[in-house]
Length: 398
Image (cartoon, rainbow, N blue to C red; front, side):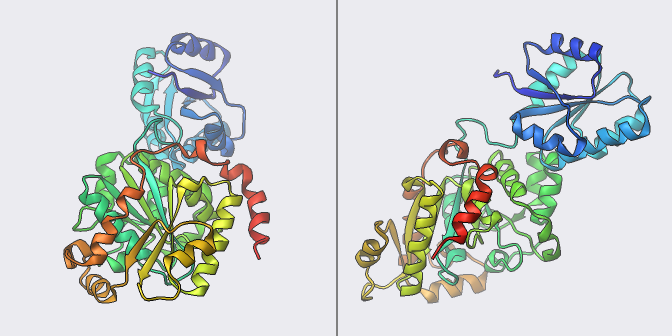
Protein backbone atom coordinates (compact mmCIF):
# COMPACT_ATOMS: atom_id res chain seq x y z
CA UNK A 1 0.00 0.00 0.00
CA UNK A 2 1.33 3.45 -0.91
CA UNK A 3 1.69 5.62 2.16
CA UNK A 4 -0.77 8.52 1.89
CA UNK A 5 -0.16 12.02 3.18
CA UNK A 6 -2.29 12.78 6.23
CA UNK A 7 -2.85 16.10 7.96
CA UNK A 8 -2.98 16.31 11.75
CA UNK A 9 -4.97 19.11 13.37
CA UNK A 10 -5.01 19.93 17.07
CA UNK A 11 -2.48 17.47 18.52
CA UNK A 12 -0.25 18.44 21.43
CA UNK A 13 3.43 17.51 21.35
CA UNK A 14 2.97 14.22 23.21
CA UNK A 15 0.12 13.05 21.00
CA UNK A 16 1.92 14.23 17.87
CA UNK A 17 4.99 12.16 18.77
CA UNK A 18 2.90 9.12 19.69
CA UNK A 19 0.90 9.18 16.49
CA UNK A 20 3.99 9.70 14.31
CA UNK A 21 5.63 6.67 15.91
CA UNK A 22 2.53 4.49 15.57
CA UNK A 23 1.75 5.52 12.00
CA UNK A 24 5.24 5.81 10.54
CA UNK A 25 4.74 2.72 8.36
CA UNK A 26 1.18 3.64 7.35
CA UNK A 27 1.30 7.29 6.31
CA UNK A 28 3.22 10.54 6.17
CA UNK A 29 1.87 12.87 8.85
CA UNK A 30 1.90 16.66 8.49
CA UNK A 31 0.79 19.06 11.25
CA UNK A 32 -1.72 21.74 10.21
CA UNK A 33 -1.03 25.30 11.29
CA UNK A 34 -3.58 27.26 9.24
CA UNK A 35 -6.91 28.88 10.00
CA UNK A 36 -9.88 26.43 10.15
CA UNK A 37 -11.41 27.78 6.96
CA UNK A 38 -8.14 27.06 5.11
CA UNK A 39 -7.74 23.43 6.16
CA UNK A 40 -9.58 22.19 3.03
CA UNK A 41 -7.15 24.18 0.86
CA UNK A 42 -4.21 22.67 2.75
CA UNK A 43 -5.76 19.24 2.23
CA UNK A 44 -5.61 19.77 -1.53
CA UNK A 45 -2.18 21.38 -1.49
CA UNK A 46 -0.64 18.48 0.41
CA UNK A 47 -2.45 15.92 -1.77
CA UNK A 48 -3.64 14.42 1.50
CA UNK A 49 -5.58 11.20 1.91
CA UNK A 50 -7.37 12.34 5.06
CA UNK A 51 -7.30 14.82 7.91
CA UNK A 52 -6.95 13.57 11.49
CA UNK A 53 -8.65 16.05 13.83
CA UNK A 54 -8.15 15.89 17.58
CA UNK A 55 -11.28 16.67 19.63
CA UNK A 56 -11.39 16.90 23.40
CA UNK A 57 -14.46 17.58 25.58
CA UNK A 58 -12.28 19.89 27.71
CA UNK A 59 -11.46 22.28 24.85
CA UNK A 60 -12.58 25.86 25.18
CA UNK A 61 -15.71 26.66 23.20
CA UNK A 62 -13.93 28.84 20.63
CA UNK A 63 -11.21 26.31 19.87
CA UNK A 64 -13.72 23.45 19.74
CA UNK A 65 -15.90 25.43 17.33
CA UNK A 66 -12.91 26.09 15.07
CA UNK A 67 -12.12 22.40 14.82
CA UNK A 68 -15.72 21.54 13.94
CA UNK A 69 -15.54 24.26 11.29
CA UNK A 70 -12.44 22.58 9.84
CA UNK A 71 -14.19 19.19 9.83
CA UNK A 72 -17.24 20.62 8.06
CA UNK A 73 -15.15 22.46 5.45
CA UNK A 74 -13.06 19.43 4.55
CA UNK A 75 -16.13 17.17 4.43
CA UNK A 76 -18.07 19.66 2.29
CA UNK A 77 -15.18 19.65 -0.16
CA UNK A 78 -15.41 15.86 -0.45
CA UNK A 79 -12.48 15.21 1.87
CA UNK A 80 -12.09 12.51 4.51
CA UNK A 81 -11.92 13.36 8.22
CA UNK A 82 -10.92 10.95 10.98
CA UNK A 83 -11.50 12.21 14.53
CA UNK A 84 -9.45 11.06 17.51
CA UNK A 85 -10.25 11.89 21.09
CA UNK A 86 -9.05 10.92 24.60
CA UNK A 87 -12.54 9.68 25.42
CA UNK A 88 -15.66 8.46 23.66
CA UNK A 89 -17.94 11.30 24.64
CA UNK A 90 -21.35 10.60 23.09
CA UNK A 91 -22.16 14.26 22.43
CA UNK A 92 -18.76 14.81 20.82
CA UNK A 93 -19.19 11.74 18.60
CA UNK A 94 -22.61 12.93 17.44
CA UNK A 95 -21.36 16.44 16.65
CA UNK A 96 -18.34 15.07 14.77
CA UNK A 97 -20.45 12.77 12.61
CA UNK A 98 -22.96 15.52 11.90
CA UNK A 99 -20.09 17.77 10.80
CA UNK A 100 -18.97 15.11 8.33
CA UNK A 101 -16.35 12.95 10.08
CA UNK A 102 -15.99 9.40 8.75
CA UNK A 103 -14.43 7.79 11.84
CA UNK A 104 -14.25 8.51 15.58
CA UNK A 105 -11.48 6.72 17.46
CA UNK A 106 -9.68 6.88 20.79
CA UNK A 107 -6.22 8.46 20.67
CA UNK A 108 -4.72 5.25 22.02
CA UNK A 109 -6.41 2.99 19.45
CA UNK A 110 -3.48 2.96 17.06
CA UNK A 111 -4.51 -0.31 15.45
CA UNK A 112 -7.99 1.07 14.75
CA UNK A 113 -6.48 4.25 13.34
CA UNK A 114 -4.21 2.30 11.01
CA UNK A 115 -7.21 0.29 9.80
CA UNK A 116 -9.19 3.49 9.27
CA UNK A 117 -6.36 4.94 7.19
CA UNK A 118 -6.28 1.81 5.04
CA UNK A 119 -10.02 1.89 4.37
CA UNK A 120 -10.74 5.63 4.32
CA UNK A 121 -7.65 7.52 3.19
CA UNK A 122 -7.82 7.00 -0.55
CA UNK A 123 -6.41 10.26 -1.81
CA UNK A 124 -7.40 13.89 -2.24
CA UNK A 125 -10.37 14.47 -4.46
CA UNK A 126 -8.68 12.86 -7.45
CA UNK A 127 -9.06 9.57 -9.24
CA UNK A 128 -6.66 6.79 -8.37
CA UNK A 129 -3.50 6.67 -10.51
CA UNK A 130 -4.03 4.42 -13.49
CA UNK A 131 -7.81 4.72 -13.20
CA UNK A 132 -9.65 3.82 -16.39
CA UNK A 133 -12.32 6.38 -15.60
CA UNK A 134 -12.44 9.48 -17.77
CA UNK A 135 -14.41 12.65 -18.46
CA UNK A 136 -15.73 13.55 -21.91
CA UNK A 137 -17.03 17.08 -22.52
CA UNK A 138 -19.28 17.76 -25.51
CA UNK A 139 -18.51 21.39 -26.30
CA UNK A 140 -20.57 23.46 -28.73
CA UNK A 141 -18.72 25.94 -30.92
CA UNK A 142 -21.89 28.02 -30.67
CA UNK A 143 -25.41 27.62 -29.35
CA UNK A 144 -27.87 25.36 -31.11
CA UNK A 145 -25.41 22.91 -32.69
CA UNK A 146 -26.92 19.87 -30.97
CA UNK A 147 -24.56 19.17 -28.08
CA UNK A 148 -27.29 17.88 -25.75
CA UNK A 149 -28.51 15.37 -28.32
CA UNK A 150 -24.95 14.16 -28.84
CA UNK A 151 -24.07 14.06 -25.13
CA UNK A 152 -27.21 12.13 -24.14
CA UNK A 153 -26.89 9.58 -26.93
CA UNK A 154 -23.13 9.23 -26.49
CA UNK A 155 -23.73 8.48 -22.80
CA UNK A 156 -26.29 5.86 -23.81
CA UNK A 157 -23.93 4.28 -26.32
CA UNK A 158 -21.15 4.09 -23.72
CA UNK A 159 -23.57 2.55 -21.21
CA UNK A 160 -24.70 -0.01 -23.78
CA UNK A 161 -21.05 -0.94 -24.39
CA UNK A 162 -20.83 -2.18 -20.80
CA UNK A 163 -19.51 0.91 -19.04
CA UNK A 164 -21.03 2.63 -16.05
CA UNK A 165 -21.88 6.16 -17.18
CA UNK A 166 -22.92 9.43 -15.55
CA UNK A 167 -24.26 12.28 -17.68
CA UNK A 168 -23.72 15.71 -16.08
CA UNK A 169 -25.51 18.86 -17.24
CA UNK A 170 -23.35 21.86 -16.34
CA UNK A 171 -25.75 24.39 -17.78
CA UNK A 172 -26.71 25.28 -14.23
CA UNK A 173 -29.61 27.57 -15.07
CA UNK A 174 -31.32 26.33 -18.22
CA UNK A 175 -29.93 22.87 -18.92
CA UNK A 176 -31.84 20.61 -21.31
CA UNK A 177 -30.64 17.12 -20.40
CA UNK A 178 -33.51 16.27 -18.05
CA UNK A 179 -36.08 17.45 -20.60
CA UNK A 180 -34.42 15.58 -23.46
CA UNK A 181 -34.49 12.37 -21.43
CA UNK A 182 -37.93 12.99 -19.89
CA UNK A 183 -36.61 12.79 -16.34
CA UNK A 184 -37.64 14.50 -13.11
CA UNK A 185 -35.13 16.68 -11.32
CA UNK A 186 -34.63 15.29 -7.84
CA UNK A 187 -31.07 15.42 -6.54
CA UNK A 188 -29.23 18.53 -7.76
CA UNK A 189 -25.56 19.25 -8.37
CA UNK A 190 -25.48 21.50 -5.31
CA UNK A 191 -26.97 18.67 -3.23
CA UNK A 192 -24.23 16.30 -4.35
CA UNK A 193 -21.44 18.83 -3.83
CA UNK A 194 -22.66 19.41 -0.27
CA UNK A 195 -22.86 15.71 0.59
CA UNK A 196 -19.97 14.03 -1.26
CA UNK A 197 -18.24 13.11 1.98
CA UNK A 198 -21.30 11.15 3.14
CA UNK A 199 -22.04 9.22 -0.06
CA UNK A 200 -20.70 5.75 -0.67
CA UNK A 201 -21.41 3.90 -3.90
CA UNK A 202 -24.78 2.59 -2.76
CA UNK A 203 -26.04 5.94 -1.45
CA UNK A 204 -24.81 7.70 -4.57
CA UNK A 205 -26.81 5.35 -6.76
CA UNK A 206 -29.88 5.98 -4.64
CA UNK A 207 -29.42 9.74 -5.02
CA UNK A 208 -28.96 9.89 -8.79
CA UNK A 209 -31.65 10.25 -11.45
CA UNK A 210 -31.74 7.07 -13.53
CA UNK A 211 -32.66 6.88 -17.20
CA UNK A 212 -34.15 3.69 -18.60
CA UNK A 213 -30.97 3.18 -20.63
CA UNK A 214 -29.01 2.71 -17.39
CA UNK A 215 -27.32 6.12 -17.58
CA UNK A 216 -27.26 8.08 -14.32
CA UNK A 217 -28.03 11.77 -14.79
CA UNK A 218 -26.97 14.72 -12.64
CA UNK A 219 -28.26 18.26 -13.24
CA UNK A 220 -28.99 21.36 -11.24
CA UNK A 221 -32.67 20.67 -11.82
CA UNK A 222 -35.07 23.39 -10.71
CA UNK A 223 -32.78 24.75 -8.01
CA UNK A 224 -31.45 27.54 -10.19
CA UNK A 225 -31.17 29.94 -7.27
CA UNK A 226 -28.56 27.66 -5.69
CA UNK A 227 -26.39 27.56 -8.82
CA UNK A 228 -24.64 30.79 -7.81
CA UNK A 229 -23.03 28.91 -4.92
CA UNK A 230 -21.18 26.53 -7.26
CA UNK A 231 -17.55 27.45 -7.82
CA UNK A 232 -14.86 26.12 -10.13
CA UNK A 233 -13.25 24.19 -7.27
CA UNK A 234 -16.60 22.48 -6.63
CA UNK A 235 -16.68 21.26 -10.23
CA UNK A 236 -13.14 19.90 -9.92
CA UNK A 237 -14.07 18.04 -6.72
CA UNK A 238 -17.36 16.82 -8.18
CA UNK A 239 -15.75 15.29 -11.26
CA UNK A 240 -13.00 13.68 -9.20
CA UNK A 241 -15.65 12.18 -6.93
CA UNK A 242 -17.68 10.87 -9.87
CA UNK A 243 -14.58 9.32 -11.43
CA UNK A 244 -14.30 7.09 -8.38
CA UNK A 245 -17.76 5.67 -9.07
CA UNK A 246 -18.20 5.67 -12.86
CA UNK A 247 -16.25 4.48 -15.87
CA UNK A 248 -17.25 7.52 -17.92
CA UNK A 249 -18.57 10.95 -17.12
CA UNK A 250 -20.12 12.75 -20.10
CA UNK A 251 -20.57 16.51 -19.69
CA UNK A 252 -23.09 18.68 -21.49
CA UNK A 253 -23.89 22.35 -20.93
CA UNK A 254 -20.37 23.78 -21.05
CA UNK A 255 -20.59 27.15 -22.76
CA UNK A 256 -17.66 29.45 -23.45
CA UNK A 257 -14.68 29.90 -21.16
CA UNK A 258 -15.95 31.08 -17.80
CA UNK A 259 -14.50 29.60 -14.60
CA UNK A 260 -17.00 26.73 -14.39
CA UNK A 261 -16.43 25.80 -18.04
CA UNK A 262 -12.64 25.98 -17.71
CA UNK A 263 -12.74 23.74 -14.65
CA UNK A 264 -14.76 21.11 -16.55
CA UNK A 265 -12.57 21.37 -19.64
CA UNK A 266 -9.40 21.07 -17.58
CA UNK A 267 -10.68 17.93 -15.89
CA UNK A 268 -11.73 16.32 -19.17
CA UNK A 269 -9.63 13.71 -20.91
CA UNK A 270 -11.54 14.24 -24.17
CA UNK A 271 -13.26 17.31 -25.58
CA UNK A 272 -15.56 16.91 -28.58
CA UNK A 273 -15.93 20.30 -30.28
CA UNK A 274 -19.25 20.26 -32.11
CA UNK A 275 -20.02 22.53 -35.06
CA UNK A 276 -22.32 22.60 -38.05
CA UNK A 277 -21.91 23.51 -41.72
CA UNK A 278 -22.42 27.25 -41.43
CA UNK A 279 -20.01 30.17 -41.33
CA UNK A 280 -20.72 31.33 -37.73
CA UNK A 281 -20.15 27.83 -36.34
CA UNK A 282 -16.93 27.31 -38.30
CA UNK A 283 -15.63 30.74 -37.34
CA UNK A 284 -16.38 30.11 -33.67
CA UNK A 285 -14.85 26.65 -33.97
CA UNK A 286 -11.58 28.22 -35.11
CA UNK A 287 -11.63 30.61 -32.16
CA UNK A 288 -12.29 27.76 -29.75
CA UNK A 289 -9.42 25.70 -31.11
CA UNK A 290 -7.11 28.69 -30.79
CA UNK A 291 -8.18 29.05 -27.17
CA UNK A 292 -7.54 25.36 -26.47
CA UNK A 293 -4.07 25.79 -27.93
CA UNK A 294 -3.42 28.75 -25.61
CA UNK A 295 -4.58 26.60 -22.72
CA UNK A 296 -1.92 24.04 -23.71
CA UNK A 297 -4.40 21.26 -24.44
CA UNK A 298 -2.89 18.39 -26.35
CA UNK A 299 -4.24 17.94 -29.88
CA UNK A 300 -5.21 14.36 -29.01
CA UNK A 301 -7.53 15.66 -26.30
CA UNK A 302 -9.61 17.83 -28.65
CA UNK A 303 -11.59 16.34 -31.57
CA UNK A 304 -13.82 18.18 -34.01
CA UNK A 305 -17.23 16.67 -34.75
CA UNK A 306 -19.44 17.94 -37.58
CA UNK A 307 -23.11 17.60 -36.61
CA UNK A 308 -26.15 17.61 -38.93
CA UNK A 309 -23.90 16.70 -41.82
CA UNK A 310 -25.33 17.33 -45.28
CA UNK A 311 -23.40 15.84 -48.15
CA UNK A 312 -24.49 18.49 -50.65
CA UNK A 313 -23.41 21.49 -48.59
CA UNK A 314 -20.87 23.84 -50.11
CA UNK A 315 -19.21 23.96 -46.68
CA UNK A 316 -17.87 20.42 -46.91
CA UNK A 317 -15.86 18.61 -44.22
CA UNK A 318 -12.75 19.27 -46.30
CA UNK A 319 -13.46 23.00 -46.38
CA UNK A 320 -14.14 23.05 -42.65
CA UNK A 321 -10.97 21.09 -41.92
CA UNK A 322 -8.89 23.41 -44.07
CA UNK A 323 -10.34 26.46 -42.32
CA UNK A 324 -9.71 25.01 -38.87
CA UNK A 325 -6.29 23.60 -39.77
CA UNK A 326 -7.62 20.45 -38.16
CA UNK A 327 -9.28 17.42 -39.80
CA UNK A 328 -12.88 16.58 -38.95
CA UNK A 329 -12.75 13.55 -36.69
CA UNK A 330 -16.33 12.42 -37.29
CA UNK A 331 -19.59 13.45 -38.94
CA UNK A 332 -23.12 12.93 -37.66
CA UNK A 333 -26.03 12.58 -40.09
CA UNK A 334 -28.64 15.34 -40.29
CA UNK A 335 -31.80 13.53 -39.11
CA UNK A 336 -34.12 16.01 -37.40
CA UNK A 337 -37.13 13.70 -37.59
CA UNK A 338 -35.46 10.89 -35.63
CA UNK A 339 -34.01 13.28 -33.07
CA UNK A 340 -37.25 15.12 -32.30
CA UNK A 341 -39.20 11.86 -32.12
CA UNK A 342 -36.70 10.45 -29.60
CA UNK A 343 -36.80 13.63 -27.52
CA UNK A 344 -40.59 13.74 -27.44
CA UNK A 345 -40.69 10.14 -26.28
CA UNK A 346 -37.89 10.51 -23.73
CA UNK A 347 -35.86 7.86 -25.51
CA UNK A 348 -32.34 7.62 -26.85
CA UNK A 349 -31.81 7.10 -30.56
CA UNK A 350 -30.72 3.50 -30.07
CA UNK A 351 -34.24 2.77 -28.77
CA UNK A 352 -36.30 5.22 -30.83
CA UNK A 353 -34.49 4.73 -34.17
CA UNK A 354 -32.08 1.78 -33.89
CA UNK A 355 -31.60 1.47 -37.66
CA UNK A 356 -31.12 5.16 -38.42
CA UNK A 357 -27.84 6.35 -39.93
CA UNK A 358 -27.51 8.91 -37.13
CA UNK A 359 -27.73 6.16 -34.51
CA UNK A 360 -24.84 4.36 -36.20
CA UNK A 361 -22.93 7.64 -36.40
CA UNK A 362 -23.29 8.10 -32.64
CA UNK A 363 -21.86 4.62 -32.16
CA UNK A 364 -18.98 5.72 -34.37
CA UNK A 365 -17.93 8.26 -31.75
CA UNK A 366 -16.85 5.55 -29.33
CA UNK A 367 -13.57 4.67 -31.10
CA UNK A 368 -12.55 8.33 -30.82
CA UNK A 369 -12.49 8.09 -27.04
CA UNK A 370 -9.45 6.70 -25.27
CA UNK A 371 -9.81 3.38 -23.50
CA UNK A 372 -7.99 4.63 -20.42
CA UNK A 373 -7.63 7.95 -18.69
CA UNK A 374 -4.63 10.05 -17.84
CA UNK A 375 -4.63 12.17 -14.74
CA UNK A 376 -5.61 15.70 -15.74
CA UNK A 377 -2.63 16.99 -13.80
CA UNK A 378 -0.26 15.26 -16.23
CA UNK A 379 -1.77 16.80 -19.34
CA UNK A 380 -2.61 20.37 -18.39
CA UNK A 381 -1.48 23.33 -16.38
CA UNK A 382 -3.04 23.81 -12.97
CA UNK A 383 -6.47 25.42 -13.30
CA UNK A 384 -6.23 27.39 -10.07
CA UNK A 385 -2.61 28.34 -10.70
CA UNK A 386 -3.31 29.67 -14.17
CA UNK A 387 -6.80 31.02 -13.73
CA UNK A 388 -6.00 34.73 -13.80
CA UNK A 389 -3.63 34.33 -16.71
CA UNK A 390 -6.34 32.47 -18.57
CA UNK A 391 -8.79 35.26 -17.93
CA UNK A 392 -6.40 37.66 -19.61
CA UNK A 393 -6.06 35.31 -22.57
CA UNK A 394 -9.84 34.91 -22.84
CA UNK A 395 -10.32 38.65 -22.87
CA UNK A 396 -7.87 38.90 -25.72
CA UNK A 397 -9.86 36.77 -28.16
CA UNK A 398 -10.72 38.69 -31.32
